Image (tube, rainbow, N blue to C red; front, side, top):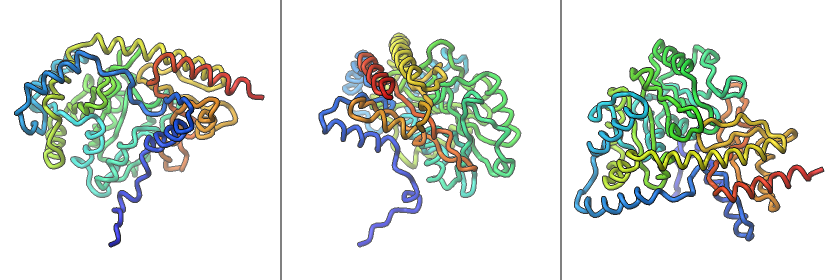
Length: 395
């Protein structure tokens, strides 16, 4: 029997972080201590009070059966309360909020609700790979807009060709931005809403990093408009709940309703006991503030070391990433490869793995690498020593 992959799957590149995992495993097999900044998965445990809440909920929900597709009312009401407290935006938990199995599920599946064959979805480059893979699997065509330091890593909406905009159904934006750490300005949100409204383009705003910031509080696009806007959120980074797979979408009730219809045909919802633990997490801010302080310390240590060896860095204002331009004479892949040499053994993600070629075949991620601030602070200090030793002692 011949087994053949679908054309969609065959045309999809391997998920970049899977390749990083493979390289890390090879170094570890050689007995080398690897300091891994590759994948943005927090290494600190989920706070104990959240875990205790989960344990209690497991017993309380022992006979609860399948969860609601859209999430329990208690969870959606808690999300609405948190969103109101954090952003000053009122949400109807019945119509404007839906639970998700983390952010990735929502990002990948949302185009299924909105995109037809031939429709264009505008996606950032560099950006989260499921923005465009979800588009392709839905039958749409991704068009990549570049994020460049010269424009503070914001999209240049005026540069998108009009013939592309005529076919555009959706635009993905992500602020605070992964991988660059930039926070969007009020002026940008206003410009984006005006741009999309004039062309009937749905705005999908990935705000999964809104709670990892260092000084200025990021705003939600829903503070500016709900009309034609849907927001994706997650507790993965905020509350170190990556393994729990819990998040939500919210915004324009028409878009949320369409997303709910997709979910009823794809999955059976997030387990109710996990939603209960998420309620506990959303009602506490102390653990989030503690994590912000930890990431800030790690950011400062790493940024100083990378600056010392000649990397150009716009110090991130948010997220748990450092987006660094490779030292002179190296591109992102060359720099990441040098860091993988056994005497340094530091793992980062080449920017080209997060950046897709634009219409002119340039790749905005080519000369960059991304560091995720997930190793413990002592390992970050050790990595800084190794990086300086590996580059500054070189002839």
